[in-house]
Image (cartoon, rainbow over all chains, first blue to last red):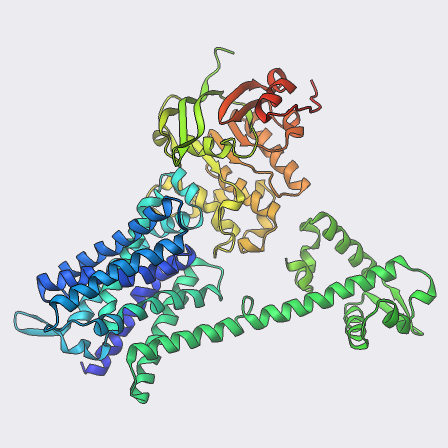
Length: 385
Length: 246
């Protein structure tokens, strides 16, 4: 296997392994915790490295994961005192742990292959140099095996505990009442996240591993209302961004992890703007339509309330309801298109459909009874809540 | 009366948050087959009482028994409807999927829900009039519809005891009537239903049993015997007058 392919393979495995716990972190509003973990595992990594002298040693991963879980415990302990809020607690804990790691490196590791830059930014391009050799046979890059193992464990746990993770994320109270301890599941997820971050940090660095966890999930969240689809989409976004990022770095001769994160950001931005229902443009369009429809309703109500001819002349409407010409025209067109009004000799009359529509809409607004306007939801944004 | 089975027994239950007691030495017996309201002012510990019965909150003292055994051994007999506001309704899931969560308890760890669970969930949705909305994303439901979905999730558990935390909060009048009718049906079927309730006016109409709570237990018993101005005043601290239909 050539180095290029190996790097892309590692990137793919890292992206998948990060995307899966990322989905649950995003849904639990714990994105910041992944940032904290990614920094505070540093002392675990450093101590592990002193003992094993190998960045891919299982002991190192274990130690770092323990530090990750300690971070979560400390954050929760500080938060529980009620003296500071969660974000403050996070801001207190991870720099403290991280700085211990920085000092440890500076004091002891000046002459070994471990520096703060490598930890923070990682270097995927070097990953293929560190080979796993079993009884003299080169079986591939070590980090591919490590991340592959972590990924396999993550996927296995996802399949085994999917329903437990779902219910405890959605409704911790019910989860506890049903006997699926939210505490156990919470720390399970935190352990998996910590292990993943440790495994991935060498490839993409402690800072950018956060992007691989959070960005794909946040992007997928905008596109679907189904947890399984959200997981699948996150994985797809993570992998495509990782590969695209690799090639971007290749052509720009830039940092691989930096390019990957840039692509992740661009993908999120694109989806944020253009997502069909939650995207910015869709939301703006919907708000504009809703405004028009409120105007339509006001207009129909006016017709409903006034039988006299003077109140129903097209020109009169412009002045009377106090709208600009364009808006009046939009509203008139919309009403006509839906056969809600009839115009004859410049006189506007409510059709029977228009009358029925107005009554239903009024009743809906007063009583908030959804059942009756169900069939109108397809045609009118106003009723889609 | 004395022959009645006790569905829920609470002994000397004390719960504290940060060393401040929110429930103080509660003794409570709920007979089987009643529809009971827990009433009391804000901060009286109504939700806390339910949550500690269900083991969601650890008490600092006291014990709870469901049909004579600890809750952990009787989970399958109990269904729980948390406050609607306690979950994130933007969670990516559908009405049907939320109801299916009610079947998770019977399944236990790891096992996945199958066709049997799906069928039961659809029936529960039907019962609360939400079948047409089964595939709707939950954020697209109105407040009343969300509460019905929660009720369906409890129904699918097919329990003996139902705990509901403010099921009428933020729902329209139609939904309120639909919910209370289902609760009355449950009672008719011999189930025990415990509801944290806010609207004192409707207590005599909806419930046959009531517990007055304000950190301590003030009174518990049949609505017709103890739902009076005296207990209301003791509970709410001010001179309380409600029209009680005797």
